[in-house]
Length: 263
Ligand code: KIV
Image (tube, rainbow, N blue to C red; front, side):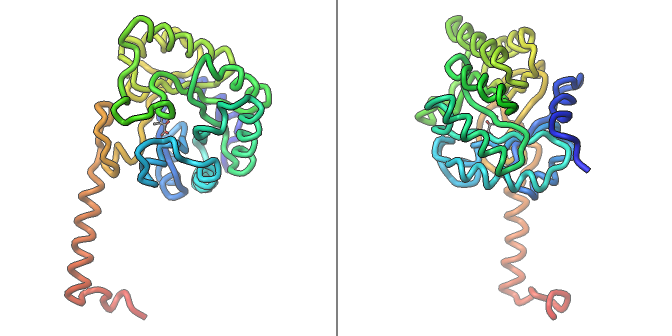
């Protein structure tokens, strides 16, 4: 039996060791990842990884809900967070609340993630008031990147550092239970983690964050993102190529299907 939703978040927030977080977009992957993870994110990165988009900006609420439903089916212990896609929460806090409720009701996930700090803190506050657990996302916010060239590290200038620190404080004050810090300098990530009362989850940030997240397909070498912050733990692409090459050869040589594979 799974752990109760509220308890999962309490356990996560009290965890002393670094938190292990990854993205998952479907039941099969969630089933593999769940035993090793504290949190699974149904990230809007699926627009790029699964749908071949050049940014995360063209994904609908319904698509996120379908993938969320699938992940929930494969997961029994990790917290499941679904990204609110661009255009579903910035317009007004009321619209955000309606969409967040729809995500939770239709997927059965544990909470939602929103990109932004000061600008959306009133929205986070309303969601939390309505008992919707919120994960923040500050630093580099992919939904705001209009051109691939603009995926740049944040927090090099003092002005930028101040803005990001203010974002952290706003997200924390609004009641988010955790926050993703993406692509900021190591020094700033360390400072943010020191300042933060909520769990900081780094991606391209620092090992001193309270946890780390990566896009699973990136670490598996299944999606060729060349960001410095990605460490490839496997080379699934060549593994697949080798298997398919063998299948092709078997088909051409009429070795497949063999006796074992026919009725
Ligand atoms: O969309 C996503 O997958 C994310 C993570 C990479 C943090 O936001």
